[in-house]
Image 1 (cartoon, rainbow, N blue to C red):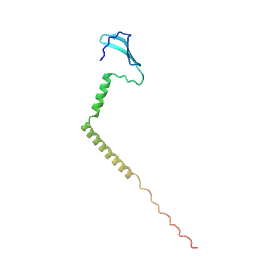
Image 2 (cartoon, rainbow, N blue to C red):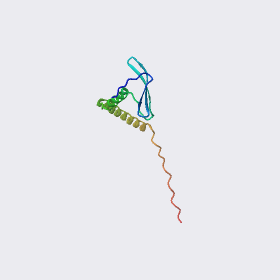
Image 3 (cartoon, helix red, strand yellow):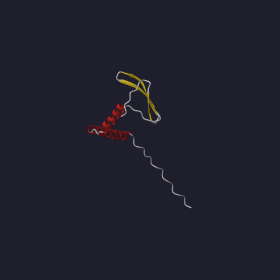
Image 4 (cartoon, rainbow, N blue to C red):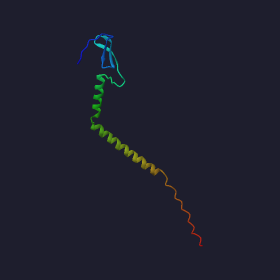
Amino acid sequence: MLVLTRKPGEKILIGDDIVITVLDARGDSVRIGIDAPRGVKIQRDEVVRAVSEANLAASHIDTAAEDRIKRSLGVLAALQSAQSAQSRQAQPAPAVTPEAPIPAPAPE
């Protein structure tokens, strides 16, 4: 790790296209400005760690939650089935009309 001492207004160059400028230094904090190409990701370490930890926690299987979801889906399926059966019973049967007899062809 390279350790540098800089005063406000002084810059650090990284490669040909990244410039870090010390903007302000007060007490135990330093404000910096970073000028870099759009394609370069600049992220705070604590944010990246928090997101990684949240993703890891979300990837663990909670069997109790899984069971609750399955029970809920089973109840939902049963309710939908009951509603479907009720709607079929409530609809009147289609009227059946007798067809008129088809006349026989005329003799030649």
